[in-house]
Amino acid sequence: MSRQPVFLFASVVSLLALVLTLAHAQSQSQALPQPPTASAPPQTQQGQATPARQQKPVKVWTNDEVDDLRDGESVSVVGNTPSTKNVSATSKTYSQEKDPAWYRKQLIPLQAEIDRLDPQIAKTQAFLNGENVSEPASIHRQITPSVQDQLKQMEAKRQADSTKKEDLLDLARHNGILPGALR
Image (cartoon, rainbow, N blue to C red; front, side, top):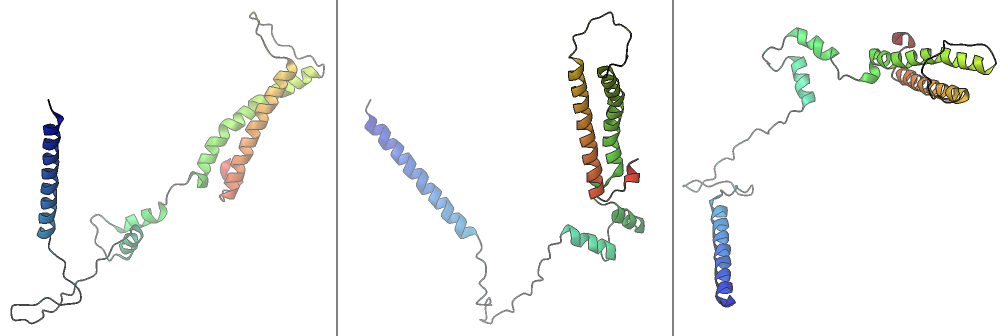
């Protein structure tokens, strides 16, 4: 089979598709109404110019402007009562950095962990100082790190928790929360 007839057929089909696409695009552009030009007013059958219509400019309202309208009661909104004004005035966006309850929620587990570690650290230090701090013997032998390593781990954990606690308290002070509100 010769390739020349296939190539010729493909060329004719491509050319036909291009011509049809151009014809369709041209008919679409002719169908669209042309906007009037501002330089010449439209003419009537008698040749007189008609007065240009005075169009009111379109106002685009932003959310802030709509809220101002509601506050001024110049816009009627179904279900808008005076009690909703108080709600909208007090219901600002929630910010956890301004909420004392959020700080308390973060501080409680940190303080509990610090309180749990303090006696363990004191007991381990007493043992290292040679004091008798015996515990009941365990049946199961556990592999434990040395006493010095245990002490270092507990102190590091306590220091990390204390740092987190202080950072939260600093953030609360920065956001205007009094220390008494966190207790």
